[in-house]
Length: 346
Image 1 (tube, rainbow, N blue to C red):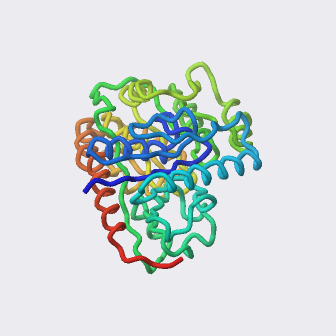
Image 2: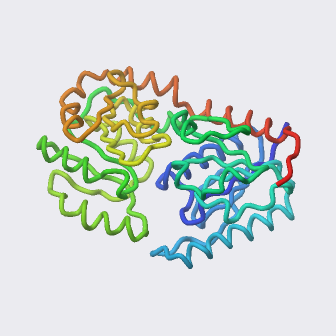
Image 3: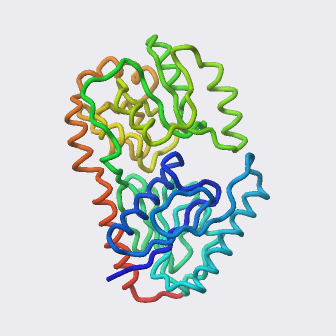
């Protein structure tokens, strides 16, 4: 059965390895669809990197205001409507936080939305939209919301071939992600400073006011020669940083629905030291691929124990649990199940 899947990204960021987790998952699924002989159409911001057919919307501005956000959503809605008029779409797969702003009436085509962020971040009426299938990315995320209809759970996966397993590690600590208050970059800096260890801080500072303020007020004052910010990194830079780090720090302050960077660290043979936020205890096997801690002081103590983690065990765990091929196969099965469901009215 050859499917035509329309994937819809968050309007404000291009789909690329340097973007967020939702964009990375969309990119992997798009590539796997094409490789499996299916047709993949992606609606995403200009400069997106996809294997299938890209339907571009305007690139995000340097500063994201409410009016720019609204214009981006309207552009997405227009592209979706035009695509549905000209293409025989089997299913639409939404990946953005704001997809309710541009989704078409459900009776026109099957629809799936993967919830990449905490359920509480979505509109309150999310579960009132009949005809829309919602997919969770972890068991901990699924437990936050009781729902009586079909709500599958498909865990995220990564392209293992993109990450180099290295048993020998350098002495630097690593923090990698989008620089915003809930990701706790300042905590990683505090930990590194308390241990007098070097730390590399890498990832984008998106043009949201609270992200910019956080970076300027909470991160920049803590930067030093040995603890520095390198900005956004591309795929090869990301892989190199992960493979060489003594350990990856994930001091998340909001409930993580998943953690691609923790999976990537495991694939690189690098221990992860993480707070017990959301799905992180599902991703990090305590004492095997890293340590789950409850506070900054415990994180610092766990850094001293990072040498107890066997790099080869981390890689084996990633191969068994986090393979993108498994994730893509699960989504393909889900697509077919949804397409074959009886129709339900809105």
